Length: 391
Image 1 (cartoon, helix red, strand yellow):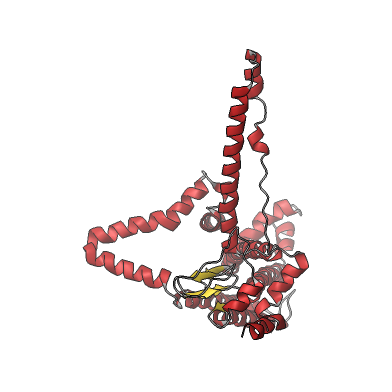
Image 2 (cartoon, rainbow, N blue to C red):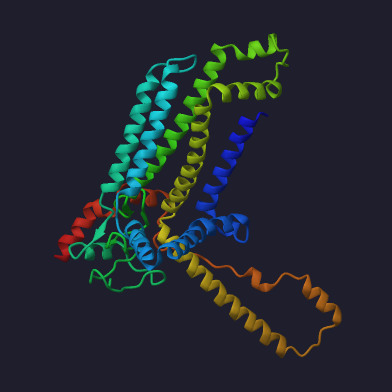
């Protein structure tokens, strides 16, 4: 393996490690691992060190400026991340067009892919704007009664209470977004990439946005792979290696030589392919996660609420079970032999058999849950009929 190919592999592995640590570092499976520590450093540690450095160099004036900058970017709606998205998509497409369109049509690709690639990116940007500027399902005094009728309180996660900011009753499954400063029905999360909340009315647009960009990445990986495969065929690289250099005609023998030739001649395409592979893995994870939530009629906000609720219920039941077991042992008149201590050491605790059941009132079954995302409740006739009755 050449130094160039080794650097490329190391670059890809480090990039993948950083992205996985940033996105998945808080997952329970990574608790106590170096991935969680990397996540803590990226999300908190690095910025904390930077803030201390700014305060040390610039004093309180620099700290106040940094806090203002942080407030604008993190606590108020702004188009910076949206512009960054357009820069990434436009820049990637420009690099691909400049470096690879000269080989289309080629050995495996026809000229039509020049136009289908542009159309695919254009549809992706259209879905981006649709998700960014669509109504997430804002709750106001005109429709709050309809949302309360459609989303009844389960008295587990949601109980009737008033939004202290909007001064209206907060329907079940809704939340007041501190960034957008509005109550959103069936609130999922606030997405900084689209600078908008994801809620009852635009979850379908958000899922389409994720799925389409995943397909774009897969399409780009396959297209670039076929471009490189076509160049190998057109230059008869395999024939030259086997006929003139005596390389054995097997994948294991030819692969390092072909990869070395591609890295020397088409390193831009390979770097773009590595970038698209990493992004497609992230998009696949996000899409599958949100698809699972939609099929169980759960939101991201509710998933965190359920984790806290189930954890609290488990702790309560374990405490009650342990207390009951302790009193049973105290009331027992038979003294156990010393052998029983060893038996107890290797016996499975009764506390481990405690099961906590998630009682999701809003789960209506696979098909109805999916239909609720595709056709939001507020866009149906029943919603307007509730409005007419309430008026």
